[in-house]
Length: 425
Picture (spheres, rainbow, N blue to C red):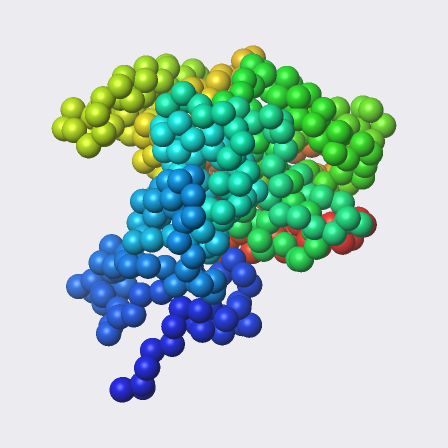
């Protein structure tokens, strides 16, 4: 900035950036610095960057809570997002909320007996809207998840009635909140619907992959009775999407967009690893139950929480989800993984499909495994082509397994999805 010139406010910066960047690249918070911190070798020291503090600046004027429910939710939002205050009309995602913050917020609300689920926050992202949506529900017993009456379908983004939706199937964590950046990056007007695990909001999931696919198909076809269909799945979601596509084509329906973001391809070594992970996760389920009986913030609970995080990491849970610790629905995660390991052997799908792979997978080898390609890229590719003998198109992306659904890597996935949806309209 020019010496002596007033710094622009967050709202002004956000408006300026929105004219030049896709929505998913516009920052949610701004911190003025005289200079960027650097390491000894002159590179940006990300660890030394200060976290945003103070009230979040948004495009909406601050409106204080008007009811007890709004006050409680606003306080929870502020604690979860580390803000001084949250107004009742502030948008959770404009304030920096993300997929894992949603899970933590829902868990902490349920700890207080508030009937708030993950899907509720996705569909009602302001304090006022959320309080109104859950205000007529009965309180839940403290520490239990709220049951979602609306089934597994979650609206990630509304769209035009004339456009068919893109259906996004949850990964192994059960939550479709991971697809929010994708929904925001797609062209305006495209409806984006998520198929979320029942267990993420207190329900009970099928105990096999085929059972999960059949359950989700019933809900999908209640919203969209006939094709052509567009399905997308990341990680385990890719495997479920494949099972759904098989059943749809067997029923005489057309699936003309099937996007698979590094699905797992089971083999004997992989199944052995899953069995080991399940043993650790069963231990984590018991640990989580014991932790929630301890007083928050006490040395005993903090020690147990650290041990739980370490156990989750050893079981293969990604670092970000593992850090949620006692707030993460470990039992649901374990049930989904057990469904994937229950003698599951995917059947070939003979329709067209698109496989999206990251550089992390294509450079994988025995000494450098990726999340899904534990041996090497040629082996993973060969197994994928065996599962998709019809027409498999492989798309190579930079980054990692996770960066395909996060900013800025999700831009390439959104661009491909948009192109395919338009081409097959």
